[in-house]
Length: 374
Image (cartoon, rainbow, N blue to C red; front, side):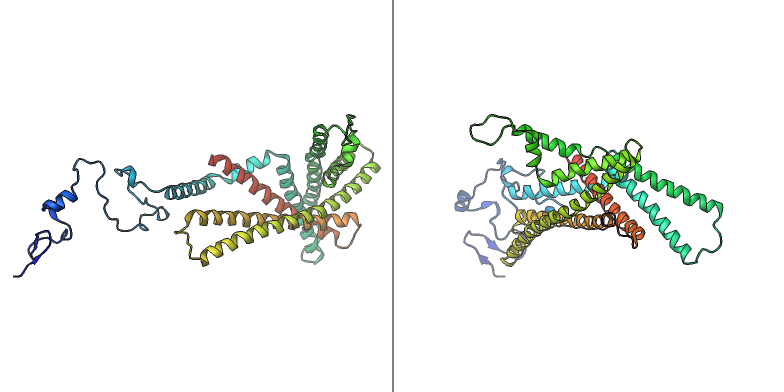
């Protein structure tokens, strides 16, 4: 049977194993032996071919390299280390999110006066919605006959609870004028002198008040008016003065809602512009042939940034909807509208309460996740 002679002097036959036919066995010839001699005691053995890089990637749950007896020169690159750490951080954050229980979030929410105010508002307007529904059903003739004594007492208790929740909420937001006042005083302390050249005369506090931004002054005046109206309901201030303070507080609430709506629109336009930039960058990279595997770091950062901007835009829209509900609610008090006042204020009040509670709940949940991720 014919045989084939190779340059290295080896003869290929049909009775041997063909597993290493393309490499000389034991480096038989002297020339090959002198060129490819390997130290058997070397700590760096020759690299072995790997079947697939994708199968062993971190994206699919396994390591690219088996690092158990891997030499340093064959360790993964810095880019692969960054991807592994990012995947580990995202998985750790996801596991942390799953570990944060809703009871813990509610516990943190009830520690703040703002959180209690929003929860009490939900309870207050839920009871008002029940009374409105009960009155509508009764007026439609669904419930016929005279009210029983138990039903009358229950409705009276619900009405009393609504008034108690309202007063409790007003007490929870007492002294809300302190933050804007401290902001103005801090500004006055930071710049105590007049801006005239060569003048060392301290500027009066009234000068700082007059040069403060209108939203801060509006918040200050609104807080003082609310406190006067609350003290009137508590019996500490004259009732007539309390009513006038309440009307002035409603006007402040109306104007501040308009101002916040404008700021909300400006903020959303900025977020949408940033979101458009990230989406354009991702589109350009995809059209240029770049993929998540060819450029994993930039792609991952862009997608994280896009998710963050989308989430921020979602809550900006929720805030805008809440401000619209507040504006409708307070417009009935400011302009003395009477038509459908009860149903409209009940619906808008409950909607604003639910939106505010959802937002503060998400904020406390995010704070817990962030605190546990470190």
